[in-house]
Image 1 (cartoon, rainbow, N blue to C red):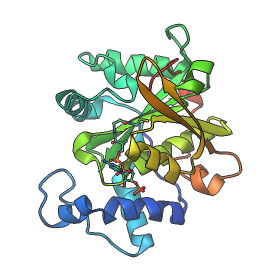
Image 2: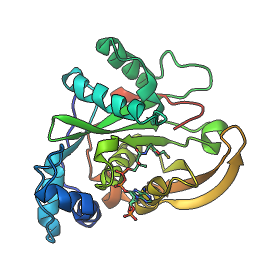
Image 3: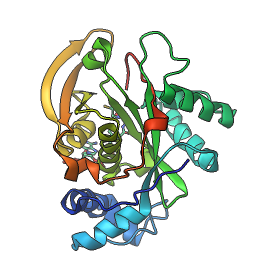
Image 4: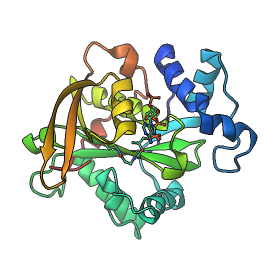
Length: 256
Ligand SMILES: CC(C)(COP(=O)(O)OP(=O)(O)OC[C@H]1O[C@@H](n2cnc3c(N)ncnc32)[C@H](O)[C@@H]1OP(=O)(O)O)[C@@H](O)C(=O)NCCC(=O)NCCS
């Protein structure tokens, strides 16, 4: 099942995201020289309506599916080749048998077969032009004490070669929309204090700093943020309204 950004979205919110998408140096460079996946993107527009339209047309939040298995595997390969932790954690699920991989994700979403301490969680792909998986998010349907301490409701990662274009903003915003559809009144997120890009992404999506704590086994300070979802229909509710009832998923007791 694939879902698209088929409904109107908040223009000001998307304009911000679109401005980031098209307004960064990498994006501007893409207009002239890059032959990477984003080389064909339109150049920056100062017209929010135009950038909004382009953004909606080019980026979709989708449920994982077999059609983009090669692109997904390539995304995971990029993480591995750079020696990066696999974030969100479902990137570490074996995918050699892609149908089995998809079945496992679907089961996690229904809360089936989860390890002790895990809650239902749903994995989403951010897809460019219907052809490339540029990011992955994981929505934990509820919080445990462990998740509240570290991990929160949502983890996300952007393909290394697609970073710096504002895509994390878009991925998080749409995933927050799904969280709201799930009935969550607020979403908790955590990130390492040194992860400036993630912190900026959370803050740009309405994150309020809650607390920070040194996590001994990670050897780093983790920060916790809260994003209110109730009463904020313009920001999150107009995006990707497809029902998620069939995706009642689970999440980790720890991790991102
Ligand atoms: C964190 C991550 C998702 C950001 O993705 P991205 O698409 O490059 O982020 P964006 O382009 O949307 O930029 C988000 C913000 O981070 C800032 N940023 C980007 N790279 C940065 C860097 N190296 N240092 C500081 N800030 C940076 C941007 O300026 C932007 O801030 P702004 O809104 O104030 O302009 C990506 O780096 C990633 O996948 N990292 C590995 C997994 C991970 O850490 N996930 C988060 C777990 S909490």
